[in-house]
Length: 426
Image 1 (cartoon, rainbow, N blue to C red):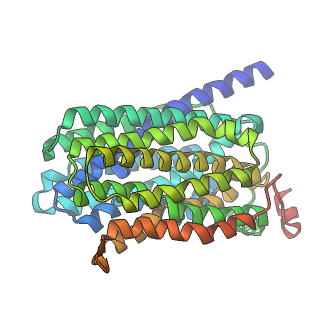
Image 2: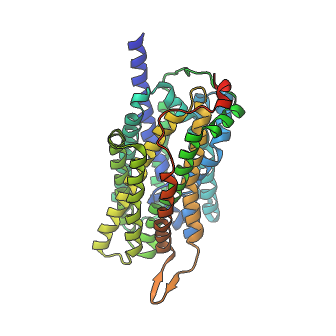
Image 3: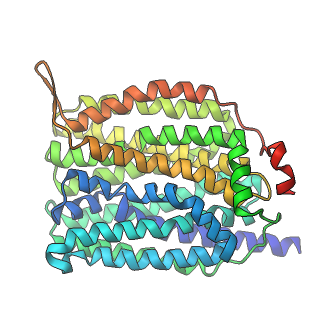
């Protein structure tokens, strides 16, 4: 029996990794890559609207993941995951079809990206409880690192291939073809999840309202989640702002921008690969301290870069790779700690509670950036600071006081169940 269960778990791990590779490659292409920035810009979107296209997915994930957890308790995690993926796929294909709507193209694109983002909180709410149902605690960090390494490798391979195909000034039909290809790849998430074996939860889940109160009362989980929000607020805007800066501020060719965007994903790839080794050797708080401090020089150097010379582009690429490394490694450790701190019998709601902070930080970072990009350049004597450079400087400055919040968080050791909620979780 134990051997059969182990085989089912291994099969579930393989299928979940395959679904993640397809899903994330599709998501990155539509919501978090130079491809969608170039596509939106080609259809007539300005800088602010273009950056908004990269912020709606994490923002709605954070805003709606707790209500989505209610649906998990009503219809089950697998049904909600598959239904959410079907709706997201329809929105994806319609977004890629936006040029067919003529003067309404940009409106259709934004509406469908929003629709795509509205569909995925249901997937996120069910995804982590699904993983927790078959992942032993001893394999969580290693599995999450391996899964994200492979899905990042898939996304990088796809984007590097795109950079070779589109050329310096890609046409709208060519960019549209890339998005349609991404939509087809995204369907693989639905295909592989539908074939995963079902695992019953070890503990009976509590009701939605009681679970929310228990999650909010879990001091270790809540304090850690607040730090996740602040950290993501200050690090997730760097790469999309840098991508726009390359195009609008430095006038870099489109294919070079896509290449640099792929290199930034390469930094994330290394971060996913190294996360488990780092976590097994370094205490969690010290690890976050190191990753936190790593982002400071990144933003300061990007603030100082003011031309598109080959030498500066090399430095630019290196900084985005370093930023990607910090973002990826911190996300793996965040997910592993979230799963560890979620109390037994309240996994779905506790992970949704923590995920709300995590994703709201990501989305708010880019929404804030999109608003600030609309400001006029700042003149400091003879020095002109563009909105792009101002954002890099702002990120760096605010990361310093944010360290105080990190240093006040005790290192989490085990799930904490508030005394007043213990009866609800038994």
